[in-house]
Length: 262
Image 1 (cartoon, rainbow, N blue to C red):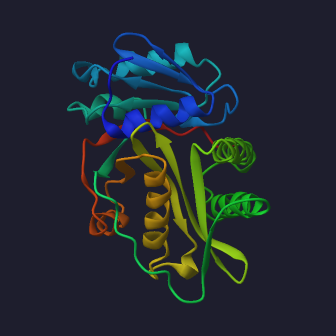
Image 2: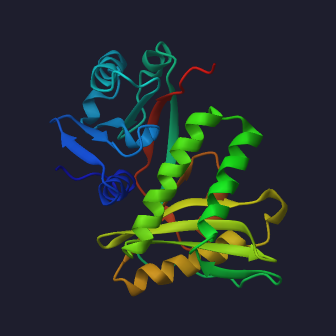
């Protein structure tokens, strides 16, 4: 399989760790996750030909043929198309994601008072699932039924990665309640962060920064020499990541159309 920039390369490595199949079609990859059909970015196309990113008609059609049961469109791109209107004509949104990386161990900030930190285990996983479901209920971003199936599939994959010590999830707890967490997965020499979240009432206290450092050291003990994190280009969290030693790498683009709501 051809090489990809760090963002997509670590995405693919994690997907393959959790049972996804990646089929190289020459100018694009087909990624399937049979164990979690509601995982939109586990069932998608990844365009590898930079010269074809403007051909929205082709890729939307190819996605429909490849995933006939899908109610969404998900196509990964190596760079931002110049002809954005071609994608807009298909009601597909283009989202630029910042990929940040470092080959120096990320700085770890002190743990704020009143919190404890540990690797997720046992009933901690159920708290993690409940937080994700509650957040989706609050925002209404995804259909509740399909999101629950997706979240349960993701939980099973995370627990499996953790059991095999390919990944680890760490949480900050206040009086036994999980209020912030993130994951990290070893992808060869690179370690990729996953889903950095902090409950609204506990933000701006340095919990995420501390957890980033904890996770980085776990990955370093396993032989990782590069740390990769991906965030939305407009997400202010990127400034915090840069303060810990991360620097911009090759960005990624997601071409995505949400499924229709009932």
